[in-house]
Structure formats: structure tokens, C-alpha cells
Length: 360
Image 1 (cartoon, rainbow, N blue to C red):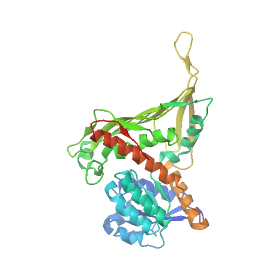
Image 2 (image 1 turned 180 degrees about the vertical axis):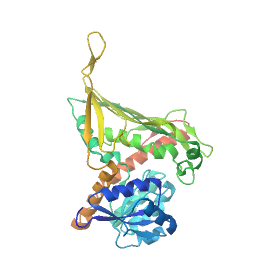
Image 3 (image 1 turned 90 degrees about the horizontal axis):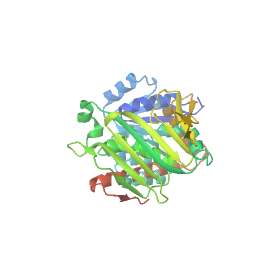
Image 4 (image 1 turned 45 degrees about the horizontal axis):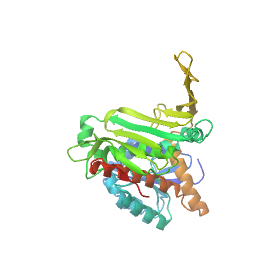
């Protein structure tokens, strides 16, 4: 633990906040200072259930936490429909912002959040954890290797899970007034982010939703697929769903190599993760096996990926706070591009699966 860790407050007691509060406690440069709910009893019970430090402050309103001068940064896991109001207010209170994904209902809302962050000199980062896993940085090296991987041609990615009847009826992620983006916003954020990561965050020219999207009676997306196309001929597809078996795959194919992994959102094991690569693959003379066989690579870590995310975010905040550094705009650019693609896919569904041109 560093001498002066970044002091976090959590606004809202969502289920995901259990995981991130643990990450804050694990990160060596962060500490959990406060939690707020609209009900002080709920905040108190949440703190007890998740073994918060006894000195953690408990607030019965979001405003009270934001007015606390001893809070450096806020983790905001509220429903997406509430992000605009509370993220802007967080920035106006000069609190650095770790914002759960999807970051907003649309890019216009997110631009208002970014404007508030820029005007108040605060760092923003979205809560996409897998991008901070050391495995991700190792895979980047393979994708950038012109001899082993070559030129990227196409990416396929998916994240799905099977929601039980109670989830599909009552969860906030299927309610149009709380999380109107449904599976596209919650699950689709991950494959979209993985595709953009693989193409070094070059926006596609068009996004086209595939026919067959499933919506509930309220019009919230439960399952959808889309294809993305770039000016230079690159392509990508993704699938996201609340009604399909748990799957979280990425396959990136280049002219010489292929990257594949099957647990990119949440690794099978907390402290060890793997992926496979193949280069200039072919078949043996009798066409009975591969030559060479794909290689499996394993990455061992000392912190779970969510704690790696908190550590990176807290490091940026510390650099601003101690050294007068400027916020790192990388962490506003990435979620904005992800939101742009997400918005285009949603628009394609709403317009009868027409191609939608993406303009930054």
C-alpha cells in the first residue's frame, strides 16, 4: 500500500459494485472511503455484507458523498439512464470518475459527460475490465507482429449468457426506463470493445445489424448480431445475448496468423488466463492433423483484472493530483468509439437492419 492511496467513494449498491469494491480494497494504490445509497439502511447493509473497512463512511444520499472533500474518485454503477445526471455532477464536484458501462444511452449524452470532465480537469475511465488484464497486453504484441500475424482481415467476437425467467422479467437491464440498451449495451459493449481493440481503435465505416434480433415486449434488445465494415476491406461480426449459453470468444484472423480465446470477458481462472495463436498453419501430408499445432500461452497475474483496472485508474488520478498532470484522453476516446458503434447498431435495428454510416 502506498502512503497516500486514492480515496474512492461508491455511488449505488448494484451487484457489480460488490466486485469493484473488492478490487478497490485489493489495489495497492486505492482505498475505499465511502459508499452511498438513496437509503442509508441499504448502504449500511451493503457495507456489512461486503466486509468494508470499519472506517468507511456511509451516506444516505448520493449528494452527501459527492460533497465529501475527502473523496478523490467515484465509482458509478448506477443504471445507464442515470449516468448523465450523476456523472456530470461527479465531474462538477471535481471527483475523478470510474463509470460503469455502457457509459450512456447514446454518444450525445456521453459527450455531455466528457465536456463536464474536461471542464473540471477530472480523469474518466469506463469499467471495461478485460482491457486491463496483462493477457490483453501480451495478445497485442502478437496482433502487431507483421511476421507472425500479418495484416488483420477479420474479427469475430461474442458475449452471451442465459438469463433465467426472473432476470428477463425484473432485471434493470431489460427495463426501458433504466437500461434501455438491453443486451446490446450490457453484453454487446464487450465484443464491440474487443473488435475495436483488435483494429487499434479505427472506427468502421458502417455497422449493419443482422436480421433476427430479439426484443422483449417493452422493445428492449435481448439478443442481436451485427457486421462491421472498414474502408480497407476489414470486416468484423459480433453477437450479444441474454438468452444464449455463456460464451465469451474472440477470434482475430490475419493474413499469416490467428488469435483465439474463449474467456475474454471473465477468465476461467482469476489469477491465470490463456489464449492460443497459430501462424502459417497448414495440414500434414495425409490431411489428418495440423502443422504446426496452435500454441497455447498462459499468463499468471498477482491481481484480478478488476483490481488491475482500479490500479491503473488510481495511478492516473494520483499523477493528476500529485504532479499536476492532465487527464489521459485515451480513456475517454475508447468508450466514445465503443458507444458510437453501439449507437449505429441500435439505429440499424430500428431502421429495418439498414447499414448505418459511422461518423466520429
